[in-house]
Length: 294
Image 1 (cartoon, rainbow, N blue to C red):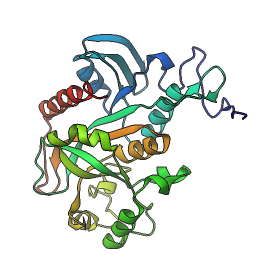
Image 2: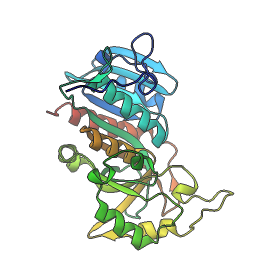
Image 3: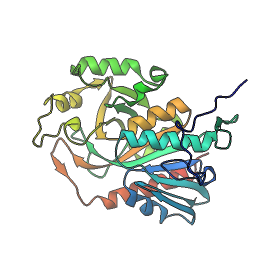
């Protein structure tokens, strides 16, 4: 069987052998990868490591690989938004599963565990600031996954259709997609988190129903989102990256999950700007659980 050679224009490898955006070498990547949006949060996590193996930085992408309680882990900042997740997950997968010398996919698949730790705004009145919401299902309000073959195979199309019909989805908006988190990761974290259906919006303002000077196209969308139910399940919160992570990981065969500390209560119209203690608590919990992962 002839293996496809990936052209240099499709996967750019720098002259030093690192992957284009992340500037990482394949050997610098651990099997467990923690993803954060904020580059400063990389140090907040890495300072808990028992030993640091390497530090790499390029643009908004900062990486530290080290050991926590004997488990090798990588923490990487992705920056904000779906587009950056497309870059990070694709390049992480390439580091794990592409032979950079031959530009072919390796015979043996290497599965990564990708866990995003973020911040978020709650869309239900009973979810309090400081809670950690685990996106058991991620909802993409972006169109990213539709650009990849196999989209429907990893999505809950029935839930998607129910949502679109129930809220009267605007025809000019991309069709939302619903992707479940990895089942093993849910089992690992479920007794320390709030179960959620989490929307990843393609922006911070109108895509999340905020009205500054430009009016959202559907001013009632958030109210319809809050009221929507799928059996006993409901949408819990907004963030900006989790759907792409869940979708791409599912297509590639990796384990993935998103957990977010709630820092804003959209129903009560309140926000907590000093949220570092809540984030630190989430980080410690996540590291302790991931150190036990097998």
